[in-house]
Structure formats: structure tokens, C-alpha cells
Picture: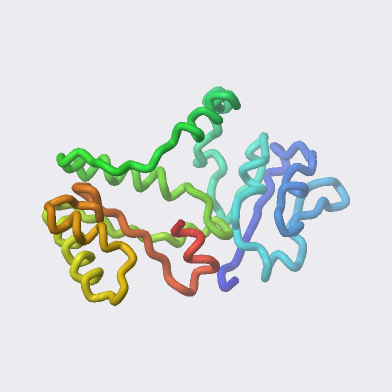
Length: 196
């Protein structure tokens, strides 16, 4: 990677328990002769700064690239869902096919996107960019453009969508007031996976 990675150890806080050594996905941290963690030489070219070593340290003894571990959001283990509730939540999930016509406030969209950016990405790079339609008229215009494109495709497998559009039914965006499009630079490690 082109950026310089640094991991600083607060020796007064460090429990010398080796958790950071075990957690590093590339094995780039080792214990020195006094059992304090340090980066291996290969870390200069291999470490991608995922932050797992910082996240796993219960003493907040590691600092990655000058970022104070105290500035990170602590994990509240009391919010951990019970396995049966989590299973029910996942099993009950359904795709939405009808939307309320009222647009969301811009601040609400911003909060939702801020939460979504924490979804896993390759090497925690968070390369995803967001394009959002804020005006329902613009969203409708994009649905119309999609219909125009579908009409131009020979042997379109979704002729039912076109017939529904002609009847005044929106089977493209289902009347959603907003559309969110994710995109990433093709130079990203796995842009398709990160956007998915």
C-alpha cells in the first residue's frame, strides 16, 4: 500500500496479553523480548490499517496512525441481541415492494447512510460512494429512463414490468421517493462486493 502505517503502544496501559498479535489477520504484529507488541518489518508494505488490533485491545493501549483509541465508539455488549431474536429478525426480513410517497428529511437520509458505511468492506477501506435522489420527481424520472432503456432491449425478459408501467404501475422503483446508488472506483480491491 502507498500509505505509511504506524502502530504506537502505550506501555503503561498494555496488558501484554498478545490479543493484538492473535487478532492481526496478516500476522504482522509480534511480541518483543519484553512481551510488548510491535509491528514486524513486513508491516510497512503489507499492513492495510484495518484497525482490528486497536479494536480488540481491552486497555486501549494501541494507537493506529495517530488516531486516539479513546475516540473510537466503544462496543456496548449489553446491546447484543439474543440468538433466537436475531434468528427471528433475519428469518422475518422481507424485500420492500411498496413505499410511502412522502420523502424523508435530508438529515434522516444522512443518518442512514452514515450507519450503512460501517458495513464490512475489503481491508476496511470504506470505498463506497453514494448518489441519492432527494426529489421524488427526479426518482420518477430515473424510473422513466429505465423503462425507455428496457423498451430498447431486444427480447427483454421483463415485459411484465413494461406492461405494468403502461397501466400506471411502477414496478421499477415501486413508487419510492428516493433512490440510493452505490458506486466505488474500479481501483478499489473488491468494489462489486463492497457495494453489495
